[in-house]
Image (tube, rainbow, N blue to C red; front, side, top):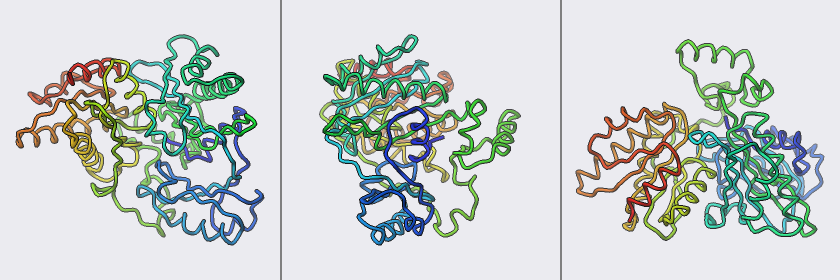
Length: 409
């Protein structure tokens, strides 16, 4: 369950992670009662990334401009999702922007700290700046300070940013989260720190221990408990972020269209011979770092984003095949490393997409090696599904990176 930015920041506030004065906007007219002094920034509250490039973030100087901008943003779909809420926030002038994240590696069963001195909208293009520290024992401030040193921070920033990471980690553990991300963490000329944007992904299976998170999914606790009981008895369990679970009236004025192959996927080109296909910024960066650690060189990467957005029939399968096509279009790519972390049902769709893609390439007399890492894999069944297709299976990220680098030589 991915939380919206304003929901994530409410959790940040509980942990004393610094955030800007802000106000929830449910309709454009709410801006007439705005309590934050101008200038302010209006942000579309959707779960998709790339809001700034899509026009979902606008700076305004007065009420008239704010109302007009809000009307535009409310009617702007970002990856086929319309915002039901906007966030109005004070403007902040940062002298420097960092990327910070705490995420769960479900295969290695350990948290990972990520950090980069290049945060903000262009973080995906600054992979070489991303640093990683695995928390392989009981957490202590040592792990946060180690990340700061790897990031190259100096002076007072080592302690102040370490403190932010420690608070992120406490939130991560206390709420049984899969991801806590701040991008960017703004640093003012005086050294003040501010979480300018944030993302939190909750673990659906742990919501029973955190009833305070259930309302953030837009569902009543009794409804969620009913779904859990149906899931336990073998019934259908829908994803808590699915639009199909929300009130139809919420979307009557803004009809949704299914995601198709025409929707954009961004290919980030690097210099190397290992193509990478992942879901989520944090996982993508961890994968690139793992390949580099094995002395490999990524050629490019595509981030599918959250798989929860693919609700239409065959949408995930089609987007996976499109991602494979984008990664493989560079003739220098010798192997594609596919690292996807999600549910077993999503993994089945990924497997079907890879098999279909490789079968088509074989008929066209082009053969490319794939290294695949998925969660909840039945290795024997997957091997049988792929048959003689050129696919290697890996159970951990390190193993996948090692296989990919070896195959690319």
